[in-house]
Length: 408
Figure 1: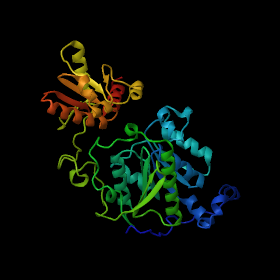
Figure 2: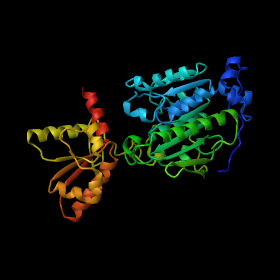
Figure 3: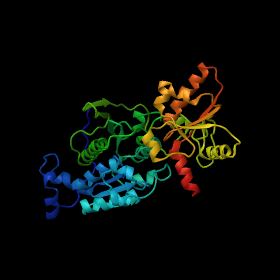
Figure 4: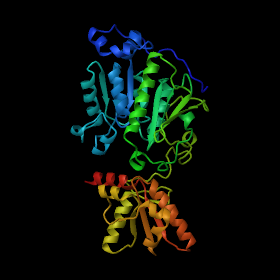
């Protein structure tokens, strides 16, 4: 395993092409590895795209333009103005609209040949197998580890091939997982990272053109699998470093048996974390209840609301620190917070600014940077023999804003 794999076509050819279709797909038809047979396979294919965001946008557009017969789109989100920097399937007029509807309208305008099936819902362990079973191939443009693992398991259970991609800042990677022919996503990442330990694009950022590169490459892999053209990335992972413009391919072998049944994400013996036997991931604060579970480092949204109200009454004294960058603070801020960017914690300048404050609560966008700041501050306090209470907001300001919207 790890060597290039030649596979038979995934889909049988559909009906003969009409004259209009021959005209539309003429450039595809001229490619020897495609021809009329390959184009008819594309026309007969049913592809499910998970996510109409950064990776999904270019993938959906190129699959539609190539003439894939049926495109299913799964997304429960709405278009925001911050999406438009990379989610090129959407435009200004779609801001505030469901992404599924926006993407479907763009596909219909691009190629009326394509049948679009919208799924305005979140993929879960409960519905994943049913969703995946209606398609020949799934393309994963999701941005959470839970969704990636659930989709991988559903594809293993159903035997459906799975094209996966991931991006962050200037780096991208992609592969083809197929349990009947090679490794799956769980062979690449046997144990998920602990919740909040890895930043997403909202936290770490991504250069807008990068998802265009990786999403387009994912669409090409999907077409290769459908047509039986070339050697799809089964048993291999390709990485791309946009800063130096280099590509690398890494062999991947199967390290565990394919999943044969669905379970909720976070089961200890499968996912490597969570309370053993409980089936729940640990240290995930509930923004609705404010519960911290067993994580003594975090405060929940409701708990912070109560702390701020007590401070306003004069019943409690603490400092709320925003460790994000100034431009992020301009976009959104928790009332009563003080901006001290993470760089000042790394340099040590923040420690003088905090002085002898007895209690500090830190926050960032999603919880990753504030966790780092918490560790740096506790180390400095230990060296100074200072007994200070320090916590950070679980889920960051993203959880805070979500909690505010639920109470409006």
